Length: 146
Image 1 (cartoon, rainbow, N blue to C red):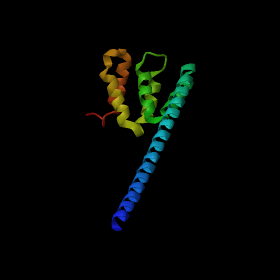
Image 2 (cartoon, one colour; image 1 turned 90 degrees about the vertical axis):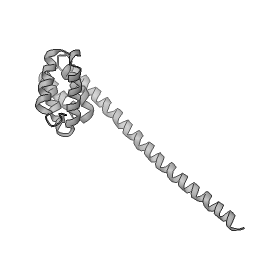
Image 3 (cartoon, helix red, strand yellow; image 1 turned 180 degrees about the horizontal axis):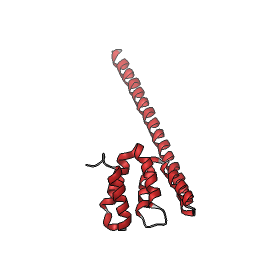
Image 4 (cartoon, rainbow, N blue to C red; image 1 turned 180 degrees about the vertical axis):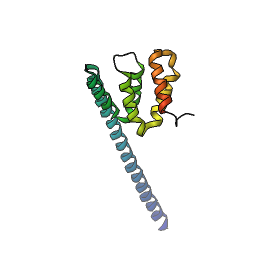
């Protein structure tokens, strides 16, 4: 007789403890995800500021410096640098290749995959700039080839 309410109380306490643990774990997980998202947004805003500086730069050395600054954002900068290397713009393609070369050290697969994606869409872009992309890819992405 006494055992029934005792088991029921123990079960309710255990249920509360388990629920509390999962709520605490979930809260920490959500907080960590929110911090990560905030960091990504901050990084993208900083990259946007560097792109603005790049757009406003008039001297080749200044452009090169801003392109290298873009590379400091790591893997997030790869699509931007590849787009700038492919696009018909006033930016020197070799500057983009210099920055991509820096990124190859830590992000070889991402750089090579991005270059290959651009090469797969070759018909949509200017031939001479794509020739540069092809040459860079062939020279730098030997280990990433399938």
